[in-house]
Length: 139
Image (cartoon, rainbow, N blue to C red; front, side, top):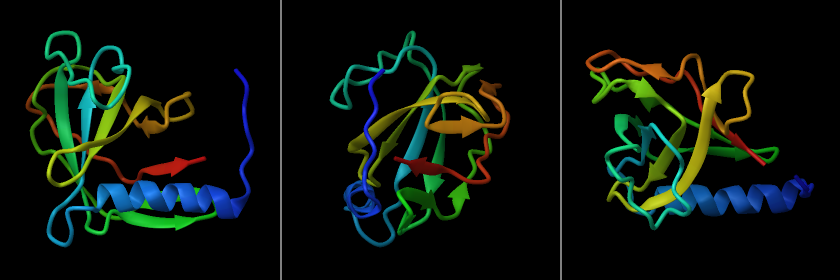
């Protein structure tokens, strides 16, 4: 796979656009990170099918969602999901505005894997807690 390297200024600018899109709903409206099974859709305009792409749980972001520095967007406090919706392996996540508009889909993996979203475990159990100590999107 071909790669590109961005300057810090351009990378920060791109991430600022992403952060602005997540926080577009304004104060008191929290962006979310929904965790799913199955293959990531082709684009954010495609709704998860509910069969192979099952919702495992939802994490809620702070408002504003995070900060940008050195080509990395670090999310502020992330509220856990106390009771997972389903059992399965998280393979991707959809970040959306507080109003529910999809902004970005990312691959998920365990820490050290290839996913943008890296979790201690991708194995989710229905009724169990889902938490994220931190989340960083780097470009």
